[in-house]
Length: 478
Image 1: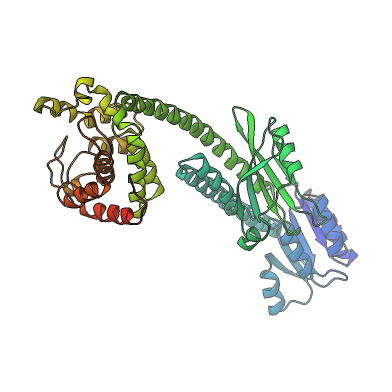
Image 2 (image 1 turned 180 degrees about the vertical axis):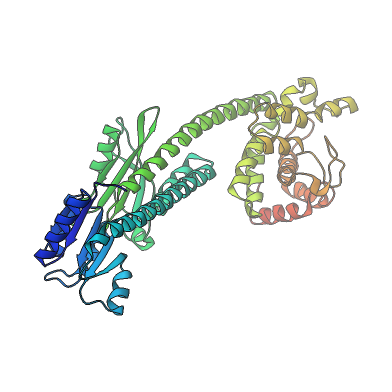
């Protein structure tokens, strides 16, 4: 056991204080501090690292029970033993409820005191170990929560929303904001926000401490502001890409009574560091994605430029397909997939010779077989980028038929990817209502009649039903 413990003895009787001090300091070399009441005891606890406290119950000013409560509130790792000359069951139970570890009856046998202290400190050691273990578990759980939720974000916009929502989940903040700010930006701009009180969000929309955001953006280090004058508690963390601040996560406690602590600072800084890394990766990915998509779409425009009859065909097909998908309740993720697939669905025609692609008359069987290769060619082109797996399948199968007589794989019914089935209806409708090298555009009524006639053979009848309703509503019109 530690021979250099700091023991606090609180008793309004001077003789008891002196006996404790003389005995413990001479016997065990402990440092003994004494106090006449609870007020004096608390001042000692705030200035000295007290290891153990013995207190009388009946004292002037602040009695032993109130002192025990305040010690527990200040530092619940300080074990407290009660001394009293008038023990009772009610008193014993009452004090034990407040974390008292031992109960001594006066007159105290001093030779037993070192054993009592040893027992108390042993219990304290176990208690602290449990607290540390619990904190470690809580820390790991919080860090895992942060990592799991951040990983669910698929875009920068999603990530910013997760960022502020997590701030509200791992701290007791009333509001949280993510602001874009840097050396080149004059005023911080709020990108997304969190409000614990949704009514407050509706009333004033929230506001940020612009001077705090700018300071954190300039200094590049976290800032914690806790004042005791009823002001907001503020915690602001910089988010960096390659050591440059591009945004600030700012969390606020508005009631002036609660405050952020070091644990909040640790977790929000951890959150910001992980989010910064993901945002950097996403920004790089999104930049590559946009560059690749722009390049591929340029190929599509090149194809359409070769054939003046199909100019803007892919754009119109995509618009029709997206309208159908939205009407059928597909998610934004599927809509995004369909948007890429629709715009690139004919990219495979770049591999078809002009004398076949632009032939004004009827195609021969061999020429038609060459045309039928364009979905596979397009799928292979997309497949090289390893980032559009779903889009690759949709492009490959957009000429399959519900009855299995399509190409390239002769899939039928629900074997055909659903978004390919949607694309098929949109593609044929636009082809029928556009001028082609081999025929003039058909009237809208004739095209609609052909779509209706081929429902259940060429097209999925459920998709045709939705398409026809949209057409009747005037939402789809050639």
